[in-house]
Length: 112
Length: 140
Image 1 (cartoon, rainbow over the protein chains, first blue to last red):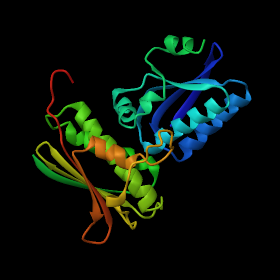
Image 2: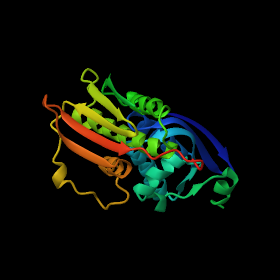
Image 3: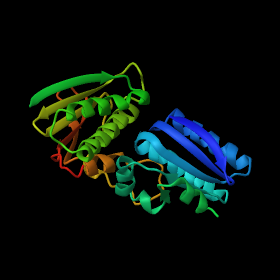
Image 4: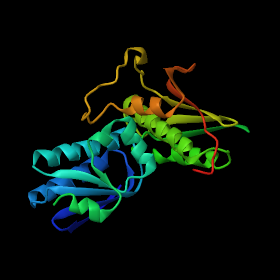
């Protein structure tokens, strides 16, 4: 998994690509969020457009990130989740937790 | 169409995409919808995650084996590891929504028609995923 980071209107946008599956991915994602929190940026959008698939350990990474940001007073929201990944969120009932958007403008505005 | 494909993978997460890619290739020759094929792909990724992590303890030198049996649109995938396995009959899904682990069996079960756990004749632990793929439609 690769993570590219940029900021827009005080919101961090993490462009993820590849496969989200635990192991080193968890450390990289956790480290990125900790750095953002340290910098005072607590609202994060994870762009999933280029993520091919997620397994249960990958879901755990997103849950951990969601919890970390929530505890620091921020939020983690999802952008452009594919139908394949959305199905996993539906069966695991996590679609009730994560706010998800198809348009970046809409996702950024949801924090204001 | 009837065929059997066997692959061995080192027990490292970076290889989890291989069985999914093999399945997508098999599916490209079948009259099945993309969603149905992807559901089985998600199941096999979970079965292999379980086999690598819990079965073979991510030991690169101890491979998992994945066997694809294709009989028309019904695919049976057997994932074998060298671990002791677990007691599936006493397994209960957790209702803790924000748990970070423990969704693998749920995902396999939701996205396959049938999931079987047990010992292979040679003593290895095996997970069998069985699914009849839905036919392709114009809506897919």
